[in-house]
Image 1 (cartoon, rainbow, N blue to C red):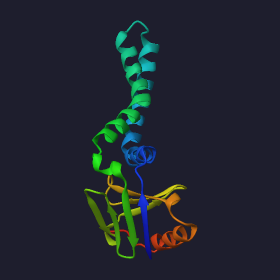
Image 2: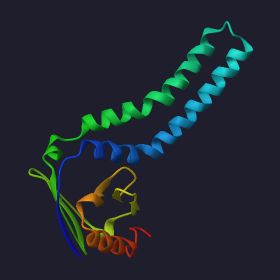
Image 3: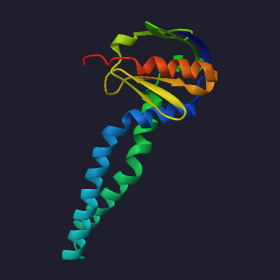
Image 4: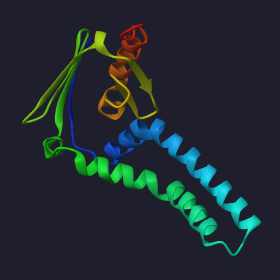
Length: 159
């Protein structure tokens, strides 16, 4: 396998990737937000005049609605400007290489923990919060089929 492609900077894709990577951590926060909402409702039912009950309820609602956009926005802000010039990605049987004008990332397939396929991309994960997005739209149908067959044969690191 030898796939080489130019990957332009795509802010929308970066936001989707960050949501995907942050998802497991945000699930716990959403669960705890639900607990706050139920607790707030219970406190309001017990004593509607108690201000604390409304504060708990509003905090629960705020966490449900605002945490994900805030986390994604902070993560977007934390990204290096180096990635905004786009990259050149090369996929071969041993390495995944992504070269930016001022930086280079090179990962052996043997070090990959898991590959997650979505309709638009493959997420190549190494660790819980580290990953590389491989966009399907930049590949030909033949390249997508070749890469899909390749990743099916990968053995995750540490397993």
